[in-house]
Image (cartoon, rainbow, N blue to C red; front, side, top):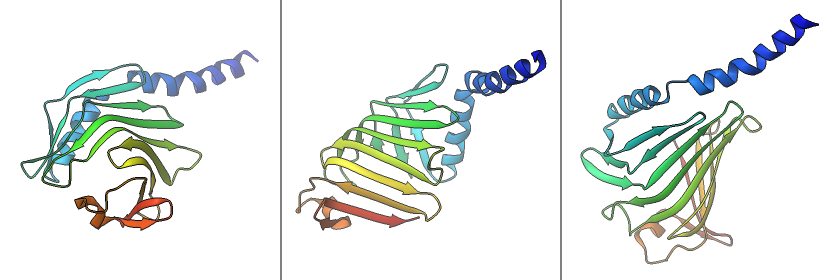
Amino acid sequence: MRMVNRIMLAIVLLPALVLILMPKKEIYYMLEHKLQAQHIVISGEKLDSGLFTFKIEHPNIYYMGSVVASADSIDLLALLLYNEIDAKRLVLAKGLATELEIQNIKFRYSFISPKKINMSGIGSIGKIQGYISLDKKILYINASKVGADSNIARYMKKTKEGWTYESRF
């Protein structure tokens, strides 16, 4: 009985210790290095790491030397069965679209639906709902209020639910 208890304790503690002791900043720097190969650079950020969380404050995102986006903060919650990314005040560069500001957007990944990443948020284009299908390689976004004369409207379709964007990757 004692042996079974010890094995059960090890099964519970090992994943928790791996998540707590995981070198989050080193993983971030490795990801940043991989993105540089795609001409994507993240700079000006301040990093903070907690037990299960990782926070990136004030990052500027560049693509081929041009500012593409900036954010106030990006929070990552990494658990084995549930992961979440929460970006606050994400602003896309004016050259890419009309002033597109997203106050808050969350991406959620769960073991319950391992082939799908759900997203929800609110921004200058209204309420945002969508998903990323990993097996079908589809990005789907539904926004509630997009101005018909805005630059972003030409990429979206008007439907009963609002404006939708669908793309394959």
